[in-house]
Image (cartoon, rainbow, N blue to C red; front, side):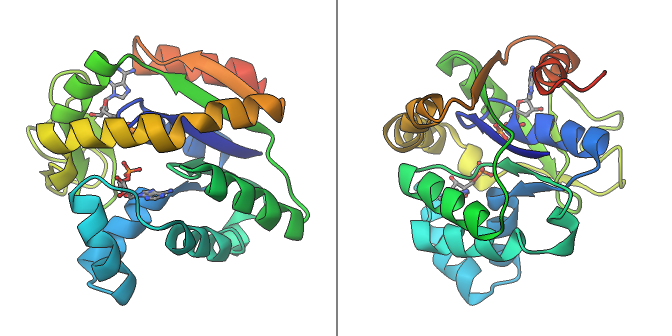
Length: 216
Ligand code: ADP
Ligand code: AMP
């Protein structure tokens, strides 16, 4: 199954795509995670991307399109993929369509996670992420069993530098301007499904499974 998860920063894309990855056995591809890894390794790409990420701007389209073009050709994507955080602009969506066409593939569903602004601000302010496996937690809504330690791999959790209040606000403005138009784009492609992203993580997940016609 080839799936895109859409939604504002903090809507729950990473959380839900990790669950989908486990359930469907297809890889979750997060351009944010890929860019953070490149930044950590101080590759040319990572150095270029880091300034944009730090201030909450989008990394240039050609950079992320190139990353996705390469990644979708990896053998683990043959039976499907879950895109988290890509596409984020209409240009990226158009490029994704071309790439999939070249690979003789197409999207099965685009799931839009709808969450109000006040909720995403409180989610992002309390978000923590594992330094090793990228598993996402929340200090109140979804805490790890041991304080600041990942349940899955026992590594430390960290707070992302772009999860500071002033950066969160500029990311939300950029989302409205650059990414929100994708809702209309995928509506006109007749592929958009909207899920109300509030409530327990498992409740949201069950709604997604229902849409995908996968048994819980
Ligand atoms: P995104 O990938 O869309 O930016 P995340 O999946 O990283 O969003 O979630 C943002 C924060 O909100 C994380 O701290 C996560 O634990 C928390 N979160 C995710 N889903 C829910 C939910 N349904 N209810 C409460 N908190 C949630
Ligand atoms: P995320 O982990 O999805 O919240 O992304 C973190 C940051 O990485 C974003 O604020 C952008 O700076 C950058 N980024 C991730 N995905 C994309 C994308 N598809 N297009 C442009 N920038 C991206």
